[in-house]
Structures are given as C-alpha cells and as structure tokens.
Image (cartoon, rainbow, N blue to C red; front, top):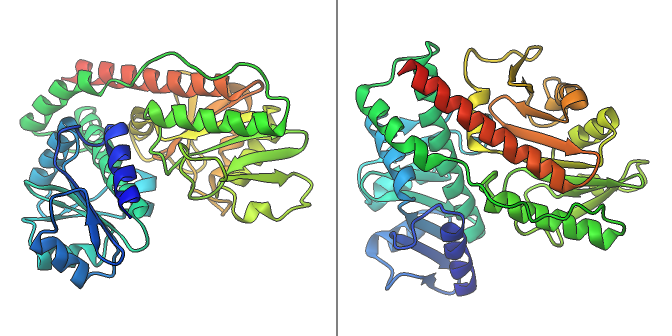
Amino acid sequence: MMDQVHKYHAKLVGQGLVDTQGPVELYGLDDEIYTNSTGVPEEVAALFGRLNINSLIIARPNQVQWSIIQELSRLNQSLICPCDCESLTFIHDIPLVECLEASAVARALNRRKGCIVKDVGIVTTGSVSLEQAFISFSSICFATFVKFFADCLNGLTGFGPLPEPRSLDMLFSLMDKCRPLEGANTLSRDIPRSEDAILASLDQAGKIVVDRRLVDSFFGNISSLDAGTIYISQTGSSLDELPGHIDRVPLDGSSTCELTASSELLAHVRVYERTGDTAILHGHPRFSVIMSMHGEPLGFDEKRFIADVPVVAGEVGAGRHGLVHTLPAAMEQTHAAIVHGHGTFTSSPGTLCEAFDALSAIEQLCYARYHCLVASHA
C-alpha cells in the first residue's frame, strides 16, 4: 500500500496538480491505514469509519488552481456545477464543505467522488484503490479550471452573466500563468513497422500528451491502424501507463477485444474510414474545451469553427447523438476537430508524432484566441 501512496503522490506533483511543497495527504487502507503523513488524524480515521472507502486524498491544488477554486467557492455557496461534458458525466457536481469535520465531509462524499473543503483543499475518495481518488482529484481540478475560464469568457462576450470585477481581476492576473506548455516533440517520425514498434509508439505518445498536460492521464484515448487492425487504448486506461492496456481490434470482426477497448472505438474506426489516416490522438486540452463552449450551446446538427478547426457536438459512444455521427465527417478534410465541451481529436496519415503536433498547435491557437477575445472585451 505504501508503494501506491508514493506512486500517486508523485503523480500529483509530476502532473502539476499540486505544488511540490504543498499540503498533500494520501491515505490507503489495508490491514491498517497507510499514509505519507506523520499520522492518521482523528477526522481521517472517522471518515474511513463512516464511508465505504479504502483510500482518501486531502490536498491543496497548485496555487493557480487553488485561487480559481476559492473564487468559485465564493460565487457558489454550496455547490459548484461543472459546464464541460466529461465532468458532468464523471463527477456531476462538486459539494462545498465549510471545514474538515467528519460528519459534514462524509455527507458530501456519500453522494459524490470528491468535495472542496474551504480553506483546506480538495478531498477525494476511492472504494477500491488510490487511483480512483487520484482520478477524482484531477477531474475536480480540470472541471473548476474550465468552468472559471469559460464562464468569464461567455460573460464578457454577452453569452452569460457579466463576471464580477474581482473575478475579472483574477482572470487577467492568471492568463499568462496558464499558457499551454511548450517543448520539443520527441516522438519518432518513423512509421512503426512491427507490432512491438506500434505499441512503443502508443506508449511514448500517451506519455508526452500527459506530460504536456493536454489530457488528464485517465481520460482521452489513442490508437494506431496497421494492416486491418486497430491498436487502441483500453477503456479506463491511463495514457501515461499504457503497456498492457492496448487492445488489438481486427476490423474484420474476428475478435471480441473491442469489449474492453476505448468507448470511442467506433468513432476511431469511422475516422479511419473517412480520412484514410493511420493514427489518432484524443485529448482534453483545457483551452480547446473552453473555446469550444464559447457562444450559444451547439446543436447536434450544427458546426462552427475556431480558425479552420471544426467544432461539432456529440456524446460519448455510438448512440443516436453519439460523436460517431458528427466527428468523422468533420475530420475528413481537416484531420482535426473539437467535440463541443469534450475535447480534441487529431489524426495523421503518418505517425502519432504528426497527430501530437496538431493537438498541441490547436491548444496554442485556442489559448491565443481566448486571450484576444478577453482583451478586446475588457
């Protein structure tokens, strides 16, 4: 259990979710409660007694994220309601609790995966593993970041309530600090010629997408097409831990591997059919998601553009309003599209290297567009 405590502490720090010296407490229950802290406080022990959990994280997110959460907590007295599709599906809403008192926190965590405790930080739980608590912590950070920036932009441009002066002051002070990460693309531009090379390329691409914070590790998906077989990340897999979590799905239907493949497998299949490409990346870059929600809600049959990048509607999966019906056609000419409130898909006829370049470039574009819109309406 201590290995898991150390692993997810390192992931919280490594993914920039918490500051290196920030207060971060992880607890995991086995034969006893294991922790990276100096002991198990009474309130923590009480939470393990009240809740059906085996893991708990109590941590203050990085300084920028924490200032956003504090502002949203000021504006929303008891509940923060996310506005992006993934957060609405996965965490629904985020309860606000006044203090780290076991009965109050337990009431919130009995119905949700995590909550925000004012002046303390984020508290999340897992019923099976610390990974669950880590995923919920990351998701709350993503949801609150997107909500703050999206609400400010839509309010400034007439698509929502005008932000309060305090919120605008914070927005302008944070903009430069939230610039998307940049750096050299270290992925190979050589087309993989064997299954081992394909698996290695998927692993490397998953790691760099997480490292550049273009997706939280648990979300997003990635695939490669070779000789009639799609190699795709499994549903629920972490993109920075893909070895052993890639499914091989023959397009002739001769295998049932698709049962564990990403829930967006069919969308990948249709994109390959429409574009003739051989590599697909799907991430949740924050400003791409934010900019996709700028303006009126997007109808299922509607499409708009950010520069030449199409934005389309669509739900996860292959239902009547599934993105499988909107995304592939949108990508046919551009090899990229943003699903409204969800995330960005990019494809390439070459390698995942080119798909990553496109994913990163679209996020830089969306950040620049956001910056210009805010500046022009200030």
